[in-house]
Length: 207
Image 1 (cartoon, one colour):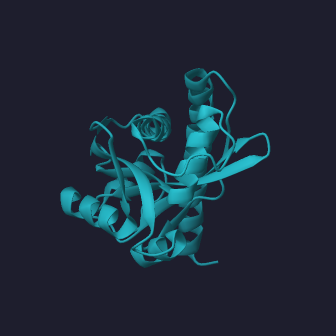
Image 2: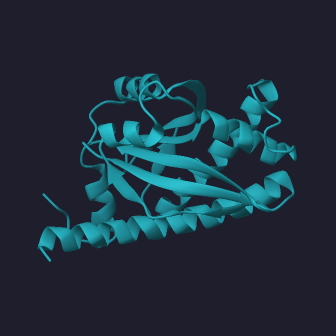
């Protein structure tokens, strides 16, 4: 195995561990917030380019809900938590105790619920990174959007700055009884930000 492949594997192992800790914290926070158990699982973290993200989510015109916030400090970038349109409605049903399929449109209560869940999830990941590394990260107030994927990602890129060519994608599964809902956590780091993260973890840094 080439050295670059070994390094890449080490990177992903570290990010996977951060993801697992973040989801564990989020599950605890959600149980306290909702006063009921919502189990969370995180499959393997991976890096994708923008075209792969669009393909994974169904294309640039796919409607998604998004909780978006900017990161400052030692790891500047943007954090986003996205749900497909049907997953958004199903998650609202799960949170409200409705039968899946009840919600078919977003109202103010639904927006508030999704925004709060996204806030808890993104906060848990950020706290996990800070706890493992000691790095300082400042966050903006989370913003909610319900729009086409292409428009949401374009707005984030324009508002952000200089990004790396890869997006960290962590697929998250919500379980309650036999129901399962999928969401996607995206980290769009500014160029060089991930190298600072890995260096702090004592890992070799790729050029």
